Length: 285
Ligand code: NAD
Image 1 (cartoon, rainbow, N blue to C red):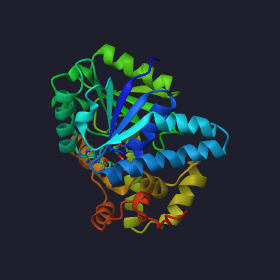
Image 2 (image 1 turned 90 degrees about the vertical axis):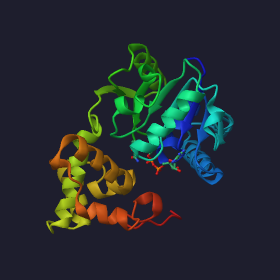
Image 3 (image 1 turned 60 degrees about the vertical axis):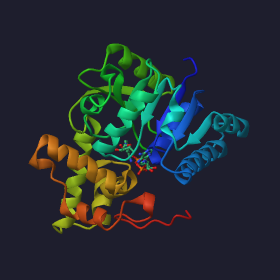
Image 4 (image 1 turned 45 degrees about the vertical axis):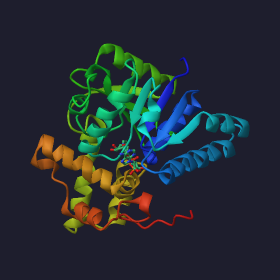
Protein backbone atom coordinates (compact mmCIF):
# COMPACT_ATOMS: atom_id res chain seq x y z
CA UNK A 1 0.00 0.00 0.00
CA UNK A 2 1.21 3.56 -0.79
CA UNK A 3 2.61 5.56 2.09
CA UNK A 4 -0.09 7.71 3.68
CA UNK A 5 -0.14 10.69 6.02
CA UNK A 6 -2.12 9.53 9.02
CA UNK A 7 -3.21 11.44 12.10
CA UNK A 8 -3.97 9.65 15.37
CA UNK A 9 -5.90 11.75 17.88
CA UNK A 10 -5.42 10.62 21.49
CA UNK A 11 -2.05 9.20 22.51
CA UNK A 12 -3.25 6.94 25.34
CA UNK A 13 -2.85 3.18 25.32
CA UNK A 14 -4.88 2.71 22.12
CA UNK A 15 -3.72 5.79 20.20
CA UNK A 16 -0.06 5.00 20.85
CA UNK A 17 -0.56 1.38 19.75
CA UNK A 18 -2.42 2.39 16.58
CA UNK A 19 0.27 4.97 15.71
CA UNK A 20 2.94 2.31 16.25
CA UNK A 21 1.46 -0.33 13.93
CA UNK A 22 0.77 2.24 11.20
CA UNK A 23 4.35 3.61 11.41
CA UNK A 24 5.72 0.04 11.46
CA UNK A 25 3.99 -0.47 8.10
CA UNK A 26 5.69 2.57 6.55
CA UNK A 27 3.13 5.33 7.03
CA UNK A 28 3.93 8.81 8.38
CA UNK A 29 1.95 9.27 11.56
CA UNK A 30 1.25 12.37 13.63
CA UNK A 31 0.00 11.82 17.19
CA UNK A 32 -2.24 14.50 18.71
CA UNK A 33 -3.11 14.90 22.39
CA UNK A 34 -4.10 17.70 24.75
CA UNK A 35 -0.62 18.44 26.12
CA UNK A 36 3.02 17.94 25.14
CA UNK A 37 3.33 15.74 28.23
CA UNK A 38 0.61 13.38 26.99
CA UNK A 39 2.07 13.33 23.47
CA UNK A 40 5.49 12.59 24.98
CA UNK A 41 4.04 9.73 27.05
CA UNK A 42 2.51 8.23 23.90
CA UNK A 43 5.78 8.44 21.96
CA UNK A 44 7.70 7.00 24.95
CA UNK A 45 5.25 4.09 25.16
CA UNK A 46 5.85 3.37 21.46
CA UNK A 47 9.64 3.44 21.93
CA UNK A 48 9.30 1.03 24.88
CA UNK A 49 7.08 -1.31 22.88
CA UNK A 50 9.53 -1.26 19.94
CA UNK A 51 12.37 -2.05 22.38
CA UNK A 52 10.51 -5.24 23.31
CA UNK A 53 10.31 -6.20 19.60
CA UNK A 54 14.07 -5.55 19.28
CA UNK A 55 14.81 -7.74 22.33
CA UNK A 56 12.68 -10.52 20.82
CA UNK A 57 14.61 -10.04 17.53
CA UNK A 58 11.41 -9.33 15.59
CA UNK A 59 12.92 -6.01 14.40
CA UNK A 60 16.44 -4.56 14.48
CA UNK A 61 17.61 -1.46 16.35
CA UNK A 62 17.88 0.29 12.95
CA UNK A 63 14.24 -0.66 12.17
CA UNK A 64 13.22 0.88 15.47
CA UNK A 65 14.97 4.17 14.60
CA UNK A 66 13.34 4.25 11.14
CA UNK A 67 9.89 3.64 12.65
CA UNK A 68 10.39 6.40 15.24
CA UNK A 69 11.44 8.81 12.47
CA UNK A 70 8.02 8.31 10.83
CA UNK A 71 6.28 9.47 14.03
CA UNK A 72 5.71 13.03 15.18
CA UNK A 73 3.56 14.66 17.84
CA UNK A 74 1.51 17.82 18.27
CA UNK A 75 -1.18 19.37 20.46
CA UNK A 76 -2.92 21.02 17.48
CA UNK A 77 -5.56 19.30 15.35
CA UNK A 78 -4.82 21.91 12.65
CA UNK A 79 -1.49 20.14 12.05
CA UNK A 80 -3.53 17.35 10.38
CA UNK A 81 -4.30 19.54 7.34
CA UNK A 82 -2.65 17.09 4.92
CA UNK A 83 -3.88 13.84 6.48
CA UNK A 84 -5.27 11.13 4.17
CA UNK A 85 -6.77 9.39 7.20
CA UNK A 86 -7.31 10.29 10.84
CA UNK A 87 -7.94 7.64 13.48
CA UNK A 88 -9.52 9.13 16.59
CA UNK A 89 -8.71 7.35 19.88
CA UNK A 90 -9.68 9.82 22.62
CA UNK A 91 -11.63 8.85 25.73
CA UNK A 92 -14.96 7.03 25.25
CA UNK A 93 -17.15 10.15 25.38
CA UNK A 94 -19.67 10.86 22.63
CA UNK A 95 -19.68 14.65 23.09
CA UNK A 96 -15.88 14.80 22.92
CA UNK A 97 -15.70 12.57 19.84
CA UNK A 98 -18.37 14.60 17.99
CA UNK A 99 -16.54 17.84 18.78
CA UNK A 100 -13.27 16.42 17.45
CA UNK A 101 -14.93 15.05 14.30
CA UNK A 102 -16.63 18.41 13.59
CA UNK A 103 -13.23 20.13 13.91
CA UNK A 104 -11.42 17.51 11.83
CA UNK A 105 -14.04 17.91 9.10
CA UNK A 106 -12.93 21.54 8.73
CA UNK A 107 -9.21 20.68 8.75
CA UNK A 108 -8.66 17.40 6.87
CA UNK A 109 -8.56 17.50 3.01
CA UNK A 110 -11.76 16.58 1.14
CA UNK A 111 -10.51 13.07 0.27
CA UNK A 112 -9.59 12.31 3.92
CA UNK A 113 -11.25 9.49 5.83
CA UNK A 114 -12.21 10.07 9.47
CA UNK A 115 -12.15 6.85 11.53
CA UNK A 116 -13.02 6.33 15.18
CA UNK A 117 -11.58 3.65 17.44
CA UNK A 118 -14.68 3.88 19.63
CA UNK A 119 -15.60 0.70 21.50
CA UNK A 120 -19.33 1.28 21.52
CA UNK A 121 -20.54 4.72 20.37
CA UNK A 122 -22.69 5.07 17.24
CA UNK A 123 -20.62 5.78 14.13
CA UNK A 124 -23.75 7.16 12.46
CA UNK A 125 -24.12 9.80 15.21
CA UNK A 126 -20.41 10.69 15.14
CA UNK A 127 -20.62 10.97 11.33
CA UNK A 128 -23.57 13.33 11.64
CA UNK A 129 -21.23 15.86 13.28
CA UNK A 130 -19.41 16.16 9.92
CA UNK A 131 -20.27 17.12 6.34
CA UNK A 132 -18.71 13.91 5.03
CA UNK A 133 -20.66 11.08 6.73
CA UNK A 134 -19.88 8.71 3.84
CA UNK A 135 -16.16 9.04 4.76
CA UNK A 136 -16.66 8.30 8.47
CA UNK A 137 -16.14 4.76 9.77
CA UNK A 138 -15.31 2.75 12.90
CA UNK A 139 -11.83 1.22 12.98
CA UNK A 140 -11.88 -0.67 16.27
CA UNK A 141 -8.42 -1.98 17.10
CA UNK A 142 -7.95 -4.35 20.05
CA UNK A 143 -5.68 -3.83 23.05
CA UNK A 144 -2.66 -4.20 22.95
CA UNK A 145 -2.74 -3.04 19.32
CA UNK A 146 0.74 -4.29 18.26
CA UNK A 147 -0.15 -7.82 19.42
CA UNK A 148 -3.88 -8.31 18.81
CA UNK A 149 -4.78 -9.41 15.28
CA UNK A 150 -8.34 -8.10 15.02
CA UNK A 151 -9.73 -4.85 13.65
CA UNK A 152 -13.50 -4.65 13.86
CA UNK A 153 -14.65 -2.32 11.08
CA UNK A 154 -17.92 -0.56 11.84
CA UNK A 155 -20.04 0.83 9.05
CA UNK A 156 -22.31 3.73 9.92
CA UNK A 157 -25.58 4.13 8.05
CA UNK A 158 -23.95 6.43 5.48
CA UNK A 159 -20.44 4.92 5.29
CA UNK A 160 -19.66 4.41 1.58
CA UNK A 161 -18.40 1.17 0.05
CA UNK A 162 -15.27 3.06 -1.08
CA UNK A 163 -14.46 4.17 2.48
CA UNK A 164 -15.02 0.65 3.79
CA UNK A 165 -12.79 -0.89 1.10
CA UNK A 166 -9.96 1.60 1.75
CA UNK A 167 -10.03 1.05 5.50
CA UNK A 168 -10.25 -2.74 5.15
CA UNK A 169 -7.26 -2.70 2.76
CA UNK A 170 -5.26 -0.52 5.16
CA UNK A 171 -6.05 -2.77 8.15
CA UNK A 172 -5.08 -5.86 6.18
CA UNK A 173 -1.88 -4.17 4.98
CA UNK A 174 -0.84 -3.78 8.63
CA UNK A 175 -1.35 -7.54 9.08
CA UNK A 176 -4.69 -7.36 10.85
CA UNK A 177 -7.71 -9.59 10.30
CA UNK A 178 -10.94 -7.64 9.83
CA UNK A 179 -14.58 -8.31 10.59
CA UNK A 180 -17.51 -6.05 9.73
CA UNK A 181 -19.98 -4.94 12.36
CA UNK A 182 -23.08 -2.90 11.83
CA UNK A 183 -23.78 0.14 13.91
CA UNK A 184 -25.35 -1.17 17.13
CA UNK A 185 -24.09 -0.21 20.63
CA UNK A 186 -20.94 -2.21 21.44
CA UNK A 187 -20.71 -3.63 17.88
CA UNK A 188 -19.65 -7.33 17.97
CA UNK A 189 -16.75 -7.65 20.42
CA UNK A 190 -18.11 -5.56 23.28
CA UNK A 191 -21.70 -6.73 22.73
CA UNK A 192 -20.49 -10.18 23.74
CA UNK A 193 -17.61 -9.29 26.11
CA UNK A 194 -19.13 -6.57 28.29
CA UNK A 195 -22.06 -8.58 29.69
CA UNK A 196 -19.54 -11.19 30.86
CA UNK A 197 -17.37 -8.58 32.58
CA UNK A 198 -20.42 -6.93 34.14
CA UNK A 199 -21.62 -10.30 35.43
CA UNK A 200 -18.21 -10.86 37.03
CA UNK A 201 -18.51 -7.47 38.81
CA UNK A 202 -21.97 -8.47 40.08
CA UNK A 203 -20.60 -11.82 41.23
CA UNK A 204 -18.12 -10.02 43.52
CA UNK A 205 -20.71 -7.39 44.50
CA UNK A 206 -23.13 -10.12 45.59
CA UNK A 207 -20.45 -12.18 47.37
CA UNK A 208 -20.43 -15.16 45.00
CA UNK A 209 -16.62 -15.24 45.01
CA UNK A 210 -13.50 -13.12 45.33
CA UNK A 211 -11.86 -11.17 42.50
CA UNK A 212 -8.92 -13.59 42.54
CA UNK A 213 -11.08 -16.75 42.61
CA UNK A 214 -13.32 -15.56 39.79
CA UNK A 215 -10.26 -14.78 37.65
CA UNK A 216 -8.74 -18.21 38.36
CA UNK A 217 -12.10 -19.89 37.74
CA UNK A 218 -12.59 -18.21 34.36
CA UNK A 219 -8.99 -18.76 33.22
CA UNK A 220 -8.77 -22.43 34.17
CA UNK A 221 -12.46 -23.25 33.84
CA UNK A 222 -13.16 -21.63 30.48
CA UNK A 223 -9.65 -21.41 28.98
CA UNK A 224 -9.47 -17.62 28.81
CA UNK A 225 -5.97 -16.06 28.83
CA UNK A 226 -7.01 -13.33 31.29
CA UNK A 227 -9.66 -13.40 34.00
CA UNK A 228 -12.47 -10.81 33.77
CA UNK A 229 -10.96 -8.54 36.45
CA UNK A 230 -7.47 -8.65 34.93
CA UNK A 231 -9.03 -7.86 31.56
CA UNK A 232 -11.23 -5.01 32.86
CA UNK A 233 -8.21 -3.46 34.63
CA UNK A 234 -6.28 -3.78 31.37
CA UNK A 235 -9.02 -2.15 29.27
CA UNK A 236 -9.46 0.60 31.90
CA UNK A 237 -12.38 0.64 34.34
CA UNK A 238 -13.36 4.16 33.17
CA UNK A 239 -13.54 2.88 29.58
CA UNK A 240 -15.40 -0.28 30.66
CA UNK A 241 -17.99 1.83 32.51
CA UNK A 242 -18.35 4.22 29.56
CA UNK A 243 -18.97 1.28 27.19
CA UNK A 244 -21.55 -0.29 29.52
CA UNK A 245 -23.32 3.07 29.84
CA UNK A 246 -23.58 3.34 26.04
CA UNK A 247 -24.90 -0.23 25.84
CA UNK A 248 -27.34 0.35 28.71
CA UNK A 249 -28.69 3.48 27.05
CA UNK A 250 -28.92 1.89 23.61
CA UNK A 251 -29.90 -1.69 24.40
CA UNK A 252 -31.74 -1.63 27.72
CA UNK A 253 -31.78 -2.65 31.35
CA UNK A 254 -29.81 -5.89 31.14
CA UNK A 255 -26.64 -3.87 30.47
CA UNK A 256 -26.99 -1.74 33.64
CA UNK A 257 -23.41 -1.30 34.91
CA UNK A 258 -22.75 -2.97 38.26
CA UNK A 259 -22.69 -0.37 41.09
CA UNK A 260 -19.35 -1.78 42.25
CA UNK A 261 -17.76 -0.76 38.91
CA UNK A 262 -19.26 2.72 39.25
CA UNK A 263 -17.77 3.01 42.76
CA UNK A 264 -14.30 1.99 41.59
CA UNK A 265 -14.42 4.61 38.82
CA UNK A 266 -15.74 7.23 41.29
CA UNK A 267 -12.73 6.46 43.50
CA UNK A 268 -10.34 7.02 40.57
CA UNK A 269 -9.45 3.32 40.34
CA UNK A 270 -9.24 3.30 36.53
CA UNK A 271 -7.21 0.10 36.31
CA UNK A 272 -3.70 -0.78 35.25
CA UNK A 273 -3.03 2.59 33.55
CA UNK A 274 -3.23 4.41 36.92
CA UNK A 275 -1.73 1.60 39.02
CA UNK A 276 -4.99 0.70 40.81
CA UNK A 277 -8.14 -1.09 39.71
CA UNK A 278 -9.46 -4.39 41.03
CA UNK A 279 -5.76 -5.15 41.52
CA UNK A 280 -2.84 -2.90 42.51
CA UNK A 281 0.07 -2.54 40.06
CA UNK A 282 3.68 -1.59 40.57
CA UNK A 283 4.54 0.93 37.82
CA UNK A 284 8.26 0.06 38.03
CA UNK A 285 7.51 -3.42 36.61
P1 NAD B 1 -6.76 6.34 27.45
O1 NAD B 1 -7.42 6.92 28.65
O2 NAD B 1 -5.54 5.49 27.62
O3 NAD B 1 -6.35 7.52 26.42
C1 NAD B 1 -7.24 8.53 26.00
C2 NAD B 1 -6.37 9.67 25.50
O4 NAD B 1 -7.23 10.65 24.89
C3 NAD B 1 -5.62 10.40 26.64
O5 NAD B 1 -4.23 10.46 26.34
C4 NAD B 1 -6.27 11.78 26.64
O6 NAD B 1 -5.37 12.83 27.03
C5 NAD B 1 -6.67 11.91 25.18
N1 NAD B 1 -7.63 12.98 24.94
C6 NAD B 1 -8.71 13.33 25.69
N2 NAD B 1 -9.30 14.42 25.14
C7 NAD B 1 -8.58 14.75 24.03
C8 NAD B 1 -8.69 15.78 23.05
N3 NAD B 1 -9.66 16.69 23.11
N4 NAD B 1 -7.77 15.82 22.05
C9 NAD B 1 -6.78 14.92 21.98
N5 NAD B 1 -6.62 13.91 22.90
C10 NAD B 1 -7.52 13.84 23.89
O7 NAD B 1 -7.91 5.55 26.66
P2 NAD B 1 -7.74 4.33 25.63
O8 NAD B 1 -7.84 3.05 26.38
O9 NAD B 1 -6.58 4.59 24.74
O10 NAD B 1 -9.12 4.46 24.80
C11 NAD B 1 -9.25 5.38 23.73
C12 NAD B 1 -10.40 4.96 22.85
O11 NAD B 1 -10.16 3.63 22.37
C13 NAD B 1 -11.76 4.93 23.54
O12 NAD B 1 -12.75 5.31 22.62
C14 NAD B 1 -11.92 3.45 23.90
O13 NAD B 1 -13.26 3.05 24.04
C15 NAD B 1 -11.26 2.80 22.70
N6 NAD B 1 -10.77 1.43 22.91
C16 NAD B 1 -10.17 1.09 24.10
C17 NAD B 1 -9.71 -0.21 24.27
C18 NAD B 1 -9.04 -0.60 25.56
O14 NAD B 1 -8.84 -1.80 25.80
N7 NAD B 1 -8.65 0.33 26.41
C19 NAD B 1 -9.84 -1.15 23.24
C20 NAD B 1 -10.41 -0.77 22.03
C21 NAD B 1 -10.90 0.53 21.88
